[in-house]
Amino acid sequence: MNNADLDIIREDITMVMARVQANKDNISSIAQKQTSTNELIHKLQASHTAMQVRIVILDEAWRRKNLKIRGSAESINDNKLSNFLRRLMSTLLHQHSAKGIQVDRCFRLTKSNK
Image (cartoon, rainbow, N blue to C red; front, side, top):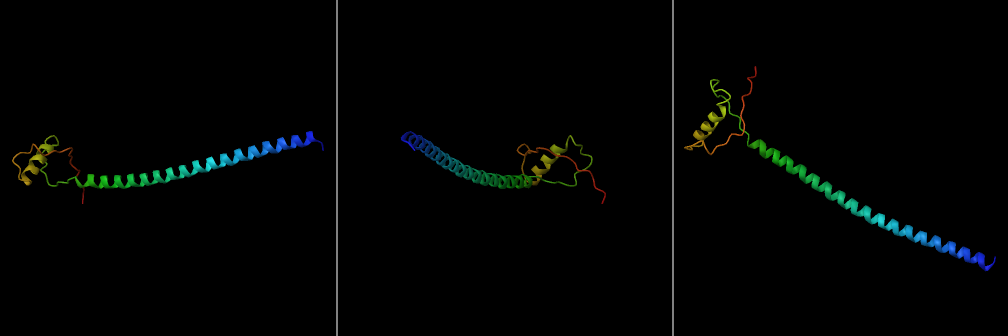
């Protein structure tokens, strides 16, 4: 082998070593990205779980504000039911006026045949 052949082999080895180093750097970069992605996934999972708990809490709180009032006279039509309920609550709460009481919605349930 002559010097020219050895120089070509040295250049090839140098290029291969440079590619190996570049691949090592890329692998390190990918590993760091994967670690940060995994951390983000864990944070998002924790946030998702916290939001699910919060939704359950809010849903339960919303249900606690619902009232079921039974036994209102059939003569009170659906248009006047809201006013009737405000006056009834005012009486039950010993308030002089029903103005501060709000009824978001009200409706009659159909009678069940028991």
